[in-house]
Length: 57
Image (cartoon, rainbow, N blue to C red; front, side, top):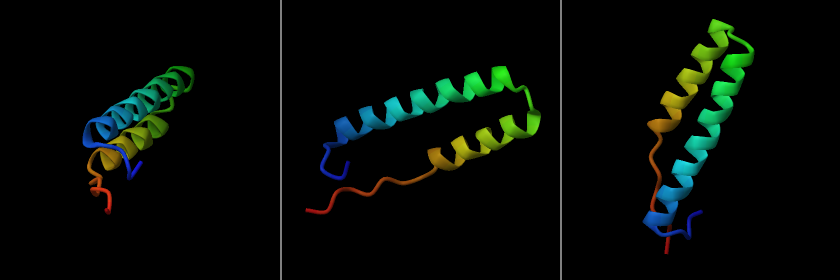
């Protein structure tokens, strides 16, 4: 991933976010356990705040 251009890196990141959200919804629908939903929400917030370092040349 470090060798991807900024545009491709953004596309990959968006796809990962989509897949994770899709699975989060499935889990929340099948197990409406509030603590589990809260943990997923916290994880997404933490992931969204991560910084992506530019690739080293």
